Image: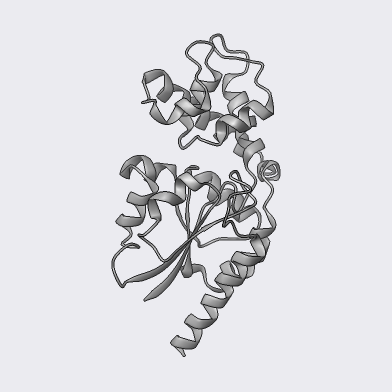
Length: 234
């Protein structure tokens, strides 16, 4: 079996919360019908259940706002999709500044893995609800390229992170040994029983979850599996 490491981006490799807050505020700044008074802690609480940018509309809209717990049961309407378009346009404008990635600092875990990304780019894939262009630019800013990326565009097209994994045949019996690292239990749960090692990162959103692993622990697992794979190849 081929060893493959699948990594979430937001909350695992990069701390992108403030960047998303900046983008959402820019998309709604001074616009009638949108709240202008959302504090960062309220945004963080809402973002913990967000899987697609349209959902931020249900926080920022001056009418029809909902609590985070209700978000998974809401289907998008035209206003939500319009918000998503405005959100990504605001992000595109912000990304024109070459220093844009500075608002999205890497976690220590990224720096632990950076040499492995360079040495074994084909062993790693990123699976994220963030759009691909912003992931690629943030990685390039910090010197990482040639990593396969699946982002929000792929999840929208196929329906879920699990569906993206299926489309890549990562779940095919006997084909891959998959290690998937995510900081959100709701993203890991569909993979339970489908892959060999779903690992919960203890430095992201769902902190304090029993069984979570530290950056050093997960780095050790990845490094050890790579060493075994290299011995088998030799």
